[in-house]
Amino acid sequence: MNTRERWVPADVDVGRPSPARVYDYLLGGAHNFAVDRALGDQLIAAQPNARRSAQQNRAFLRRAVLFQVNAGIRQFLDIGSGIPTVGNVHEIAQRVAPDARVVYVDRQEGAVAHGRLLLDGNDGAAVVRADLCEPDEVLDAPETRRLLDFDQPIGLLMTWVLHYVPPERDPVGLLARYREALAPGSWLTLSHVAADVMPDRVAAVAEALSRSEDPVFPRTYDEILGLFAGFEVVAPGVVPAPLWRPERPADAAGARERCGIYAGVGRRT
Ligand SMILES: C[S@@+](CC[C@H](N)C(=O)[O-])C[C@H]1O[C@@H](n2cnc3c(N)ncnc32)[C@H](O)[C@@H]1O
Image (cartoon, rainbow, N blue to C red):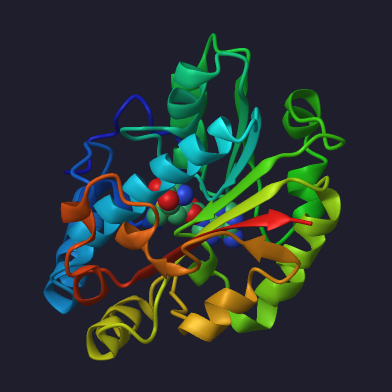
């Protein structure tokens, strides 16, 4: 289907798959096109748990945001936020704390355009189009400066996004730059495709995406733990996403085999 929907701006190429729309397809959303579904089906063929992993990632994000709201955090910077879908960060946070403020950041125009439509009329949330590999553009964007107070703790969210950053862009160095901008008591929430859980399937996914515009770079447990440098990782540590403070024991059953996403939350000291 190449019908141009209202939420897709004129300059978006709907003939090319985008990670945001493929993820939306995996989650069962409606904001995707035939090319995205074709790539999504290719990923599911390579990794039959792909849909489940996307859901588990989204559930982790919700629990991590609630954890931070309960810890007193009232402002979030959600980088690589994707197409707004069920359970957006501002909905989760503002339901509990109506004064919570959220800045979404994505480099993809379609995700940004759709986010702006959704947030129309919400004074406590905004969307910035920027690349996380350019921290100054993210941190100095007018919406970021208007909504977030960097003298107060912030919840920095980077879920299911850093595996799009190749090693040569130095993800550890990028995170250091973001960490420097955050006040002590801020949090880093991170989830990332694991290279060492079901490695054959992950390698097949990486191969399927290697010639796309958005190749993925799965990382090992130690590499993902290393992304938390300068943050104190809170219990239960960096774990398969469903094992991060599950709400029901059934959520966590068999998580290591079924979920190839490592997730964790750390506090800036
Ligand atoms: C799969 S979505 C993740 C959505 C959300 N964070 C979640 O966990 O549910 C990944 C998003 O990251 C965005 N992205 C990838 N690389 C990026 C970069 N370098 N800068 C900003 N956004 C990026 C993609 O455009 C996509 O919308």
